[in-house]
Image 1: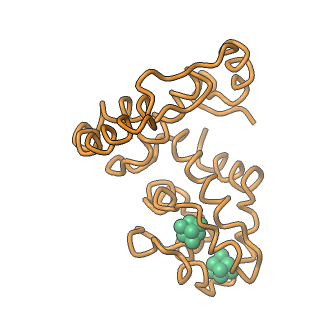
Image 2: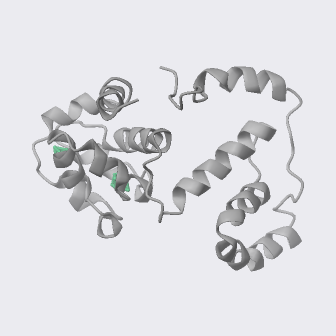
Length: 185
Ligand code: SF4
Ligand code: SF4
């Protein structure tokens, strides 16, 4: 899938077309608690999208720093669903293989997805075990917290698994990337 098709997906499936109404007021950037960590604050990211520079946008760390606080969305004077568009950009960046390599959050997303695919529910220990294969230092740093949670009975070392994992696999199948790496519409 080329960038034009990804842009169409963003516009059609993730409300990306609403960016055309952005007046570049900067309210989103001013409201965002993480804008100082982002390669491009939300207003700037949308300016790039309006310029057609999806390639830069997909390589930006901005969507990966978004913590879905929705401040931008509720304050945008044009009712642009900024947070939803950030989700869409993350999804497309993963499919396009454009997620910033130096950013750790895409690996956390992948670990989360793999554990849910396999077990039908989340398990903090299993997610951290998978994530820790790529980022062992992070996993080691979390060990004291894991031990405290374990002592209080708040952490299960063996992930629980739902009985109907084949049914779950069938349910998720339409959302899996196909052999060409493209996600079905
Ligand atoms: S708050 Fe809305 S209109 Fe203003 S820059 Fe952000 S997205 Fe554009
Ligand atoms: S939802 Fe994301 S982009 Fe919007 S203000 Fe919160 S962290 Fe920033």
